[in-house]
Image (tube, rainbow, N blue to C red; front, side, top):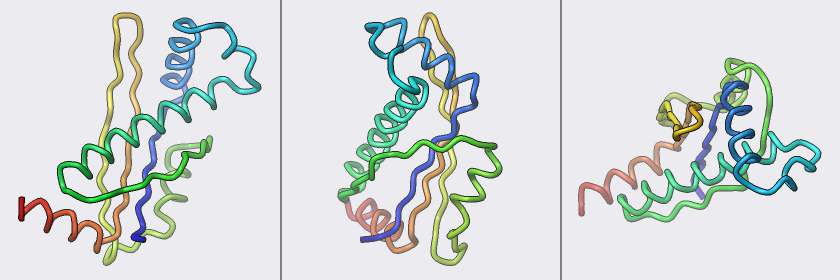
Length: 131
């Protein structure tokens, strides 16, 4: 198993807009959850992370399994510092991306960081070159 970490960072205002959009578009049962924002943001993160990694894996002909996401709250710098705490510039590759989410009634954004172990990145690139 090669190390792979995915982190989606939602500004609080974006997380709130997403939460309200989901709650307003579904049954009111979501409002009864102990922390609806946490549940909704975690599920959206799971869907987005799985989607990006599935597209990447399909394009590069590899198999990637993403763990169930966990929600952490805090300042962006603190969260990135924690995620990059085990980062080794000689052994890891980081891909950063900004994601804009919009519909007729809502706009939100987040940042995605994917940390790959260099061996996984080499395998992906080798598979891509051989296609």
